Length: 66
Image 1 (cartoon, helix red, strand yellow):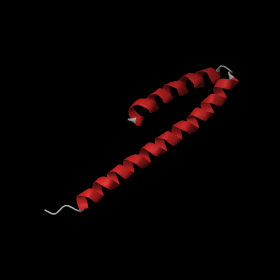
Image 2 (cartoon, one colour):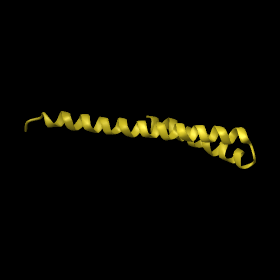
Image 3 (cartoon, helix red, strand yellow):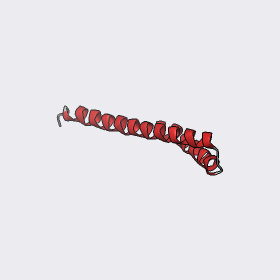
């Protein structure tokens, strides 16, 4: 869900902030840096959650007997 909804919105905001920063808006540059860090953290947490889900799915399958 995060990758499908939150990250595209953040990327759009980053694009707008980057354009404003390129025009000399110092506040936009600071916000761009902070939001970039936040986006990296969100992506890392989403990857970890996906890996944990995959590990849980594998653990559940290990207990099955054919």
